[in-house]
Length: 212
Image (cartoon, rainbow, N blue to C red; front, side, top):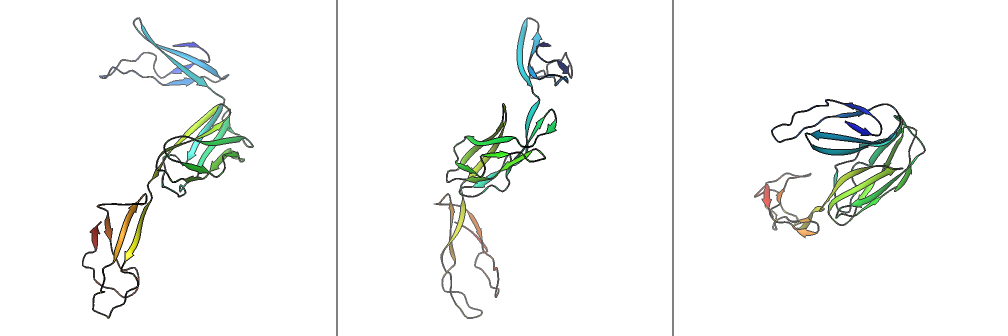
């Protein structure tokens, strides 16, 4: 039941617990003023209290959440949010983006930017040199949303030897083609590397795939 604050309706006011002892009900805030609502669930003499907020301003994630990018590279998608007041988009509002937590480092192209006519705001993210989880928060007034990102160790395949050789048709090149697999700048064991002719005369490999 609603004890204080803006009222609303429950999907069901009485619910039976399931096999795990859990009971749940959805709550829809009534149209009207914003404010803090207190809801109490009771079972016999026991009770639990929920504190909810009914707001007339919202900031919603449109895209960019859940991405992953290698260290020292840009995330493929910008972080995009939309701001609304009383359900309508709002233009000309300043939205702040900031790295909140996580072990990874990142740079934001526009930490503070203004909403367009469609209420949309975005910023690009450049991953730093440290891998790990990354949380970027977009805030507008008292409202905020978090983007959960991940920075992975950068992978690279580097030519070690065997480049720029010459041979006669039908004969093997004198030196094998050697590459090194790196992850985060460190040699990577058990990486499966495939070799294939990209252009020019064809040929045969002793092995088309091999592990480091």
